[in-house]
Image 1: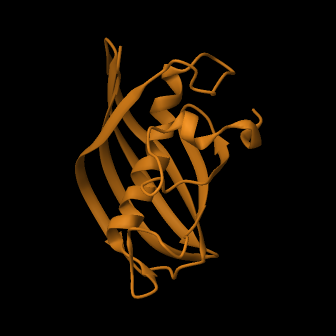
Image 2: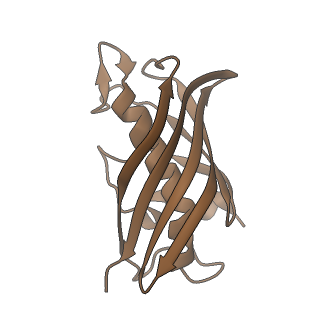
Length: 150
């Protein structure tokens, strides 16, 4: 899969200033890796630091791509005609170790723990870790609900 060809705005329903994923580096049915360089004017920044809510939103958006990709045509992640809505249904566990500064690039790795699919929606549990260089910033377990809008 050519990750450079994926337009994040076609793949995730989020738009600036709430888009917290910039690039995918790996993506399959059970795991994903993404990156995000925190801009100066980010809505989740306070006094030059990207806050906990921003880290959690980055985690959720990265995690949603694992399940969200199944709503797209195989090998076509352009989002043509597919509309999804998703939200965090539960934060089961979260540990924040450090907050990154504006301008830093964070790398997010997530893996699917469990998934339930029904007609047009998925409920899943995922584990996620966020890093800046080798420093772990956040570890969490999330439940997400993702639904295709017809």
